[in-house]
Length: 115
Length: 112
Image (tube, rainbow over all chains, first blue to last red; front, side, top):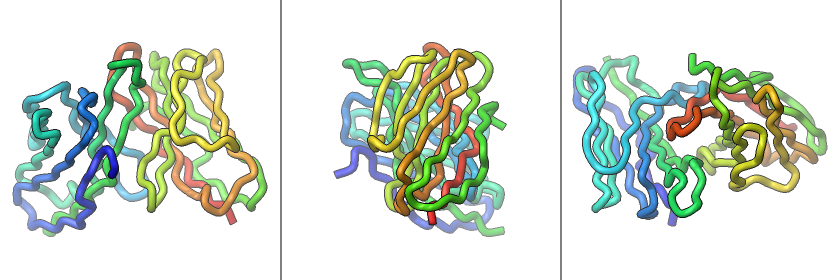
């Protein structure tokens, strides 16, 4: 079983829709949670960063972390064709228990927003 | 633009050869991370350096090695290349005490 599970999609939605992307994880030591957006043949771009449980909002993006369920989500409101990309969740235990700050990634969800 | 630079952008080589990938972190960042992205394995952590010292190793093959220089740029050396080493190789950097990592544009390696 992978430490981080993410539905690979593809997910196709009409422009203006609310998009929900999710990841589950098994390692309870994870404390730092990130969402990256990756366009084809480009490097991952950091979208959202959350520490521990809770919600964080930035413009059209909202990240949620539920550590009790080991479940994180990214919501995109008023989705645009320019949001079409692969979305990767990533998490880290930081330096907890001697762990490093390495990121463990989900496999990514391919999102297509249709005009 | 994340501020992390990587060269070359593309590399085509033959099996058995050796290549060197280069990464310059964002100004002020002391940590450099190397990741490999392949279709079947996704993004996998390879190795981390902090201010010139190796900090952590992940799924890095013995044929691969890395170092970080006094000016903080880093190089990833891949030797005795195999077809299966074809992948995107990303470098990321983070600042002191920061948990967020910023990725470079990557080097696309094709081994023929």
